[in-house]
Length: 548
Image (cartoon, rainbow, N blue to C red; front, side):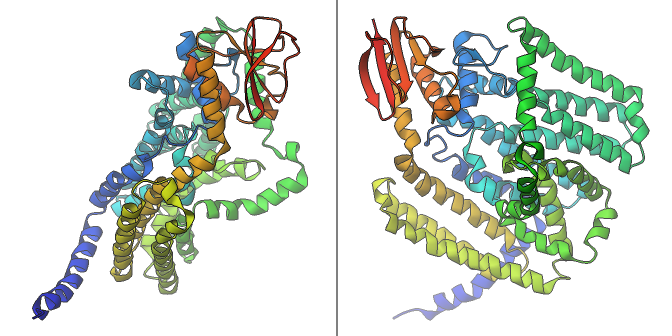
């Protein structure tokens, strides 16, 4: 006979368990944050190295690989030709990962971006916890950096420089505030300028813009503008110049073409201005800019609704730290707001400043905005239900052909999602924490299902395999990329081809416009003019020739 006592006990104990969970989340935001950090590691690392390198990844990888092959870490090159677009600090780090791990895989290439991503989130938590003395805001701000839409399913998969660079820039902001509070002008200037030198050697002139606008705005707002003319500022600036100058002095020993280096960096910067794109396109960008980035940051941007409280602005003014990050944000955001081809990853050092303000508004005003709170809670629940419905949809995309143990993974993800959705429904004041956990489940589903699916449908994978095969055929022999100039931009997957060829051969590819020399040649969409050229193999638009 069925025992009703066990069922009754379950119904009685369930509300108590929910209440205990809520009490834990309320009382232990710091422990909750670090638990979420640990839980986020598998979703972000699983299948991280599955897809071929794309976007800017192969360029960074090429420079680092060629440094190792040539044993010259002073001068960045691609295809043995000088590369001027970025200074080499990030490439040194990437080369270090290659040498440390002993491989040049996609997973290793992306680690120098993924590790700083976690360190960045932890840095946000530590800074906000220290300056605001509110671990709830600190935990939420740090996690929003990991689970906003842009980071969750795009930037966290790429071995780009921007996360590392933005982490250092954000750290500089926080240290400026730390020493500003103590009126320690020498350390304020010195440390921020040392970080500026480091970030300059990573990405170039952008670092000077951040340092300049930040210092001018902060010192002006705090009525310390005269400190820009102090010996502490001048001496610290000279230290930064010395660090940057030391690199370029060493660089000059190998390549005296400074004009080519600086003109390229300047040309890249000038392409992002209204002068390049025209007034109409610039105006359209200015109008779209805030809405576009609210979309990129969804669902974190839901918390923007709490900023409409009448006391929000006054609350910022009354808190020195919130005032500081607002001044820093406003001092730097306009550069990107006026730049028509601004990409979201360029703003990663500014996004956390917004997350802090949104988190502050959420915890400060949610009880005073019951209607908005109810709307946000309903949206969270609807999104959670959508995730629960979306996971079984994997069956309709024939993923069994690409995903191992598909049934087990779907059951696992669906069970966790239903449990988390139940918590979102039942918890009263801590709904955001299980919702953030659910977003990590979404990322895990993305890593398990979407990435393998993309692998089989991306043209990049074909060119990776073609480049690896050509590299194997020509290993130990001279290989030229025929007629590289001047149509690099017209060759799809150009840098991918170069990287996978060089990775397979462990020898630099040489660019040439002359087909008179003996050796192997690969071409894109063209034949060799040399009559003695023998076609070895064709790969769609690629061809591999040999001249004996």
